[in-house]
Image 1: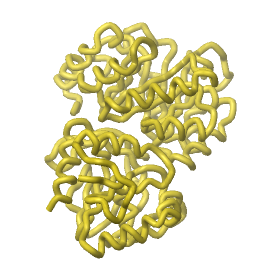
Image 2 (image 1 turned 90 degrees about the vertical axis):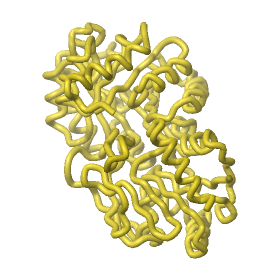
Image 3 (image 1 turned 120 degrees about the horizontal axis):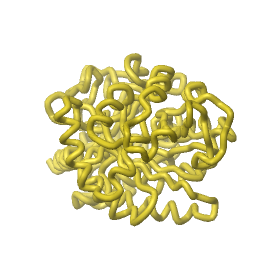
Length: 179
Length: 224
């Protein structure tokens, strides 16, 4: 299994690499050919989209999605797959999945820490914006925690930072791309 | 609701892995003696620790620029802590938030008698801790790591008054630090702050963390 992580020059993508390597995957830079392409969850929307465009990842991801090939988004990576986000004054996303992201209004923002996702257990969150999408498949304290559409799977939490439960989640994401 | 395990001496890699195995929610490394000359050492250390962890990892000590911070993140840290450098140049907080995202920026505040101190508590800054916390939030801090110098190392409980003052003044998460001696103290802190940092009570025995978590859970505090 090889996994391409669509970095855009910012933040910690190393933890995602380490987590997938622990599961036996190999890391590749070829976003088009990889078994699974991962949109990591670091930085802010405007910089991330610019970075994806500069590297041609946006086109590569669109092609993958149209061909039904697996893409996995984490945190900001989930939000970038949607049509638009309120972050950074308003940024167009990749538009793979219907929906948009809006700034969290309630509670402490950024929403940092471990929180229960439905009845699956606790995962680690670190975000100021949340997805609003008809394709949500899991929630955490009223916030969308996961969405699926076509060959895209996205989670708002950081499975690579969510201990043993997170590792199991990543394993499932990997196994989906074996199908 | 979470614990963090802090370590500033010894073999950080093994200790980090031990705390992670014992159920720590997050790990914080503060290199309080950091100098520019130690920067490559810290980056190497971060890489080695990150290899062993699957929980969030905050690193601080001598971070003076967004480039410093970026290097730490690329090495495997999830969040960067700033303290003295932010006091000297508050715009640093905004630079970090713009480059890394607020969720990666922790502003650490050390306070004695409610007043801010810098450089590992050695210098008086002449500012009120709550007021500085408010400004740090405005500038883009994602979290405030609040250490009470008065309580630190006493094992008599966190400084709840200081913590409540800061937690009530900001909308970002606050991490209480300094004074933990037992599960009751931790539970009290978690009623006010969003996280509780443990340091000296774990130094002798990292395994104590697992027992403490259980005790805190028994006190009715949600612990994962």
